[in-house]
Image 1 (cartoon, rainbow, N blue to C red):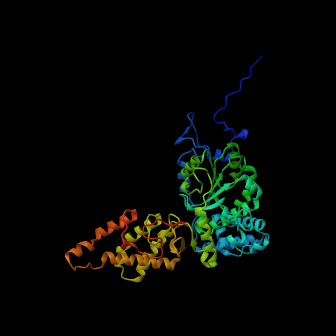
Image 2: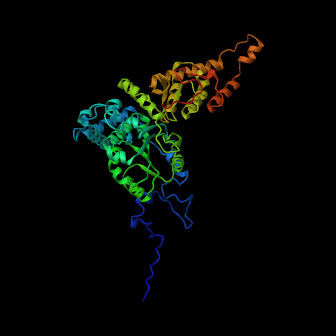
Image 3: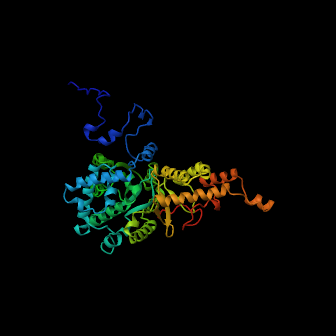
Length: 479
């Protein structure tokens, strides 16, 4: 009896199991060259996207480039081209009357008119399917259209929450606690809540450019991916989900099915297996602050404290005029400049004060208003080129309002004028004791300013912009 011997496969013919359907092309595309010891040219192999692949992916997530900035004239030109494409389709040009909504959806597609037209079309069809034709020409509101009084499952249940933080890449974080039994009973209500939460997150221009980082948590791990995904794919289509994290996954084969389905889209899928604490650690490695995940670490129940605050803030925002709602920001980004009484620890604030210190001498010695205006514009441009905004606290300090050019330039000039007064104004010489106690030379003042940037010291004289706030030295309020 002749024994057949299977010939050895050469490395060049190896397909890594793709011919058997074991590994999707999504994983193979991300895979690096691996040697016999299982280590690539830069260390451990990273061909499986789970919570064990270390910090390299976290740096990738944080360093990804978002949508490029466009001038208002360029945006208007691209919007006109998008409207021309929509005019050829099923009466879509009249379904979204708000030019701002169209600009938001245009920004999610990197200002590509053809892709933006497809996204707007998906947005209109999904909205009509969920809310009907009577709500197509109006904005979906929380208490009128999604109140728990109208359905058994409402926003107040906390199954879908917009977290009061951003990931390290500056994306908004959306949390979804999946309940298989409850979802099977109320699928339409869950879809409405997902649609509303994503739409409210994308009201922020910065979020529209960078997208959403979504965390899907399966409290009771089962093979729920296939029936859920068919519905979720319709919800995710109108909006940009940049990162998608699945937590507490028990069946990795099901995870491969999800990866294969998302291969055609732009979403980067991450899989986190294990206990609640292990998944929390996995989220941290990808830049998602785990301490904001609204789950009780003991029993895994949903925490509604921050979510109820968000609901109250949404009620207040929706009570504002529509023109003012576009300027409201709930969660500031790291590159934003926060004007008010607080520690200057944000990246935007650090850059802002560095620019002031760099140009303070030139501003003081300027002989014309035009020269000073050029310096103010240089500070404004340095923040804008990084995607930052000038934000001012409104009401009780829980909301932020984005300042336009003229208002921001006025605040910048106030900062320059105040610091010039501190540095170059004549010092009082009433007595020896008062002089040694109250006056400082230029070097000491610069040292105090640098300490303020590091958050080590806070002098009351450096409160450049006074407005309503939480009190001096308190961290930034996200809600």
